[in-house]
Image 1 (cartoon, rainbow, N blue to C red):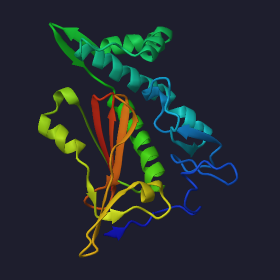
Image 2: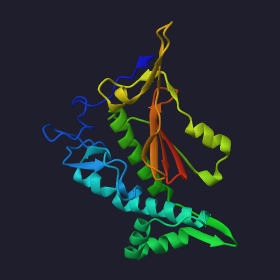
Image 3: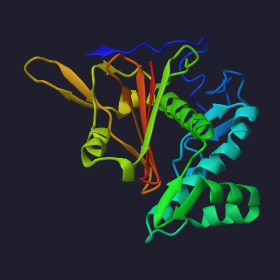
Image 4: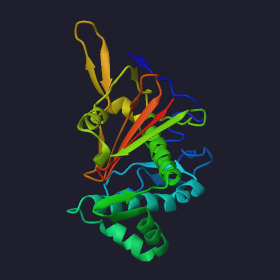
Length: 247
């Protein structure tokens, strides 16, 4: 099993991925000097009480605040859609409060999610959704693999809702991948990967399990894909299944 060298960057390991007040830091999203820290995932996709060990990454002020409206939109859209599809599901209190104070967002979702003739019809703003999915994926890749160079990556985004997926496609999505490359020494996944070694041959394999940030709210998995790029899978509200590949 080979080891993945960390591409890009000139600040040393942790420059873009470690919140350490005693050293300089770079924004994980744009590369500018970081002055704040960003929760990953955003609390917009979680409910109180928040996880005590919620990860943080360095971010500049502009990036830390520049995704808020789109995160609120995506979070509310998913929760309202889930309540429309599943009659036994109740909207989260945070969603109710957000829509009460933001009438424009409520009106927008009323147009994008409708129930007609017993059927749910929906249309999500893909530009806003994909913007947030890429942002989340960069954060997870940075936190787990200390990966910092996304500008030269070809990004492939795939997503679907579980009610449109077959049992086989869900099973394949949920699989624990075996990685042919070992994470960078010093990165979080270097110590978090599950390693199995053949006692006879000495060959080792690494497996990356799912990270459950909060039950039924948010989980993710970071691994290397078949061409050596980074693959990030995210499941939000146990309804939206997403995969982003950085090749």
